[in-house]
Length: 223
Image 1 (cartoon, rainbow, N blue to C red):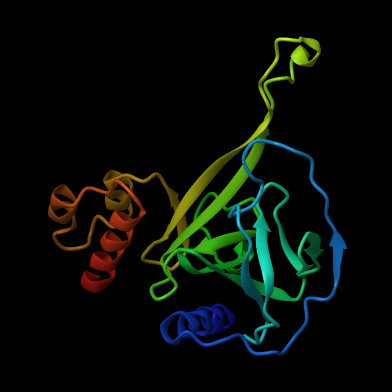
Image 2: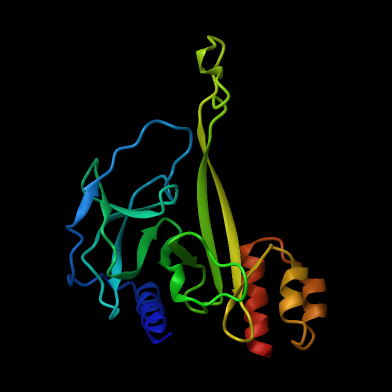
């Protein structure tokens, strides 16, 4: 847990004070990656953004163009445009992508404890690093309409595409994470003893991730 805290504090300081990554560490080791054509993208984001890896001691690597290939569950980088490499990230505890929506923190899922169902993916997103009580596991599978053998038809205009799914986990009172659906009932089942939470959720139903963040802030402030 100490190493997780180092990771989160390191990233949060970057978000809060817009500091640049230090030039300590390298991303020079990798394997070239080539992809076929599909609808959609196998990556976390269609565009590439700057980012950096984070080592066991919290040290940041050099800054590179990074992306998380969700379909293959691997971190990629571009030392030069169009030259995509799979990062050998065994020494990493996480990474940050400075996307259009801000600094996005991913960390290795096995660094957290889970009360029941645990993520299958190597990385999970820490949704709100300033208050790390929500994790998101992304997955993408190829949905191929031609799988049944219709590829020989001259009328076929359908392409295979990447379908994204996600699992959401919230931290319970014992410090482990539980998988939930984005519903007020799931949160209330885990935190039924929090004063006035039922009333709060009745007035502030959980419909999206921002609602969940506000609910967890309420829980953390009243637990």
